[in-house]
View (cartoon, rainbow, N blue to C red):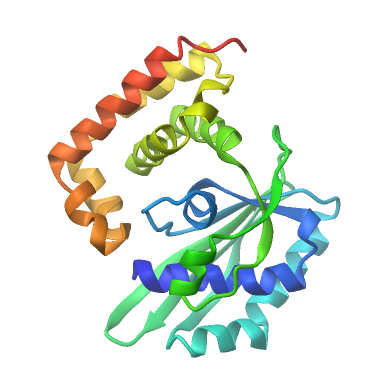
Length: 251
């Protein structure tokens, strides 16, 4: 299921890069980490920021992406079928589409695409998705806007602190970012209260939730490395220590 969802995400971005104005959206969250920042975790959903001026018109164009022959063909050659994509949230600040993916010998896999129009704090960068990952998925390495490591770290810490239901993927993602991009971590500006809240939320998380919600979406080759309880405990400890060492930042 994780592989099928990822193939859909790349196919969606291939079509979106052609059918949607590139300056109107930017990829963030787990999808950004996977497609641009070398994460070993596949994202179940795609989260993006809307950067344009007419959110309703943009949403209508996203509808056309879902209905396009191009998207259908990209999925068909991978033996994947898109099931009932539909808007489930349509407000002035959020547009959300839910869907499922069907493939042989697989239960229908749910996913969603969400655009947020709440404004942005960081400027995105227009870059090409990970060419090696795209090649492995038989996808084109298209250029789309995304957030580089430093803003990705700040966004992820804020997300961990603010979630009503804490997700163990936030800890996995931060551990990856802290290890892969230490220089960017050193340049982050994090509010002290947000850091304290993020540390508290990370400490609440349990291995059972990590195994259920994250391990299933790891690249298969990395499950032995990242899937054990010992690996999870080490990961959570590293993240909380790094956050505490930031001393609350200066903002």
